[in-house]
Structure formats: C-alpha cells, structure tokens
Amino acid sequence: MGNGMGVPPDDTAMGLPWVLTAKAAVRPGLVAPGGLLGCGAWLVPAVSEIDGVVQSDTPETTTEGSHFEVDSNEIKRIELNWLAGNVDVRVVPGAETHGKIVVDEKVQSGSSPVMVCDAVGEELAINYMEGSEGLSGCSMGWRGEKSLTVLIPDDLNDQLEMLDVEAASGRYEIAGVSCRRLNLGVASGELNATDVTAGTVDVAQASGRVNVEGSIDGALSIDQASGDCSVVSRDATPGKITGTLMSGTLRVGLPADAIVDCAVDKMSGSFTTTLPNSVEAGMAATCTLDFDMSSGNFTLDAA
Figure 1 (cartoon, rainbow, N blue to C red):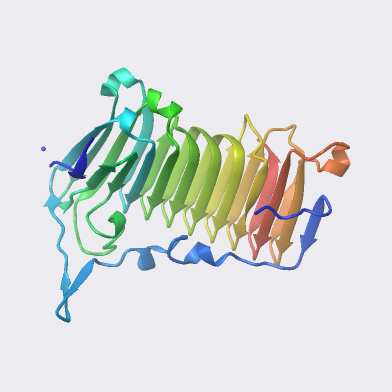
Figure 2 (cartoon, one colour):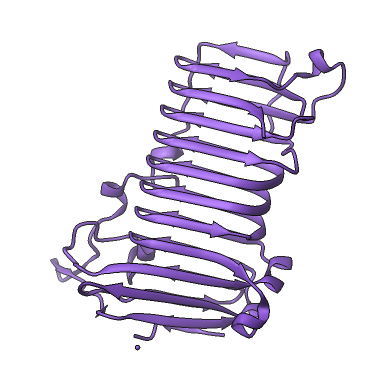
C-alpha cells in the first residue's frame, strides 16, 4: 500500500427500428463540472482563502521527475488526471514489474510540479500535481515537459473494475487494458486506446481526437462537443449505445453481424449506417442506439 506524493530521483423504448426526428437535446453534463469541461474552465489555479485573503498554493516542483509503486493485488480502480505531455498506460507481464503497478514521470527542459499518487483502499489516484485532482494551472508558466508511464501487470486485468482517465491536453496511449468500466474524458489533444476490453465504455470529449479499439460487450456512451472520435468494438456488440454529438465527426464500428435499432434525435448534420435493423434482418436487435445530435457527422458501420 502506498499513499502520498511521488518521490523525485435508464433505458428508453426505441419504438420503431429507425427513428430520426428534429430534436437535439444535448446533455448539460457535457460542459459542466462533473461532466466534461474545456481546459479554461477545468484548469483554475489552486487558491486558498485565509481571513479573507486569497493566497496561491505553490506546489512542489521537480526538474527530473518522480516514481511510485503499489502492489497490484491491492488495487481495483485506477484514476488518472493529467494536464499535458505524453502519457503511456500499458499492460505488461507481471514479472516485469514484480507484481506492482509502476508509475514513473520524467521532466525535461525545466521544472514542473511533482505528480501526486495516492493508494487509498482499493483505488489508485494519479494526479498531475497537488490540488484539484491534478487538473489545475493551465497557464502557470512551468517550462518543464512532462511524460508519464503507467505499467499495469497483466494479472491485474482479472480484477480491475475501472480505469478513469481525465486528459486536459497532450498525447495519451492506452494499450491492452481489460476492465469492467473504462471512462475517458478528453478536453483536447489526442487519446488512443487500443486492444482494450471493457463491459462499459464512457467517452466525454470537448475537442481533439479520440480513438478506441477493442471489445465492448455491455454499454457504450459518447458525449462529444467537437473534434474527431472513433470507437470500434471488433469482437463484441454492446447492448446499448447512447450519447450526444454537438459537432465534429463520430464513427462507431461494430461486428458485421450486429443488428441495431436506432433512435436519433437530430437538429442538423448527418447520420448514416450500413448495419441492418431488426425489420431488415427479420430478427431481434442485438443493440439499441439512442442519440441526440445538434450537428456533425455520425457514421455507424461494420468494424
């Protein structure tokens, strides 16, 4: 068990199989606290008020980086909140990390705040810095360039309940993760999640580019304000797909034998699909899709 700072050195009835109307109700959680915020709203410098005087909290900084480890058999949930830079989250053989989750940050070309890692109960929280769950100080002027590597031993895949990634900016690579629930929140930048297996996947995207490939056998939720998003489930069909599209491009790919009944409330933009519905297939749907569109382009096709 570890605890502390890193060490520097409800379902909706579908009705008809295809429903396309002119209503576009965008869920408010997409651009509100607790949902997905833009960088400017997320990343407010941490302050504290003492006797009416507002004082800035200055986090500890490093010019090299920091390191953190925790036994994987103690963890069932991982939460990553990161501001910028390159992030690599991948599954490796357990022998490579001696059964531990290894978190390693590197800093180049200056100083940056030290990451904060907390392992409390069965949850590991990895934060870019101290304060506001790590997402604070979008323009505080640190010059160091951060990179983060998170190594997850493969035996943890059998017990990982949730991986929650909140990305403000930068480039994120997630590979080989298997969990019951995968939450991806992206304000900007690029996130690629490949060879992932999950029961439920939840994507919240303000801008940037998101690519998810793997197997989703439960439910898929996508709230997209802008940017490009692609979610492909090659080996399994989620039973339910829900979400909102305000603008940008969205592609959802499913196995070729998927039968999808769609309800799309659309104000503008386009929705196209090459997959059959239950009437065309003459058999029950294997997936229902319920989506609200303000604009943008949404394609549903075979993976």
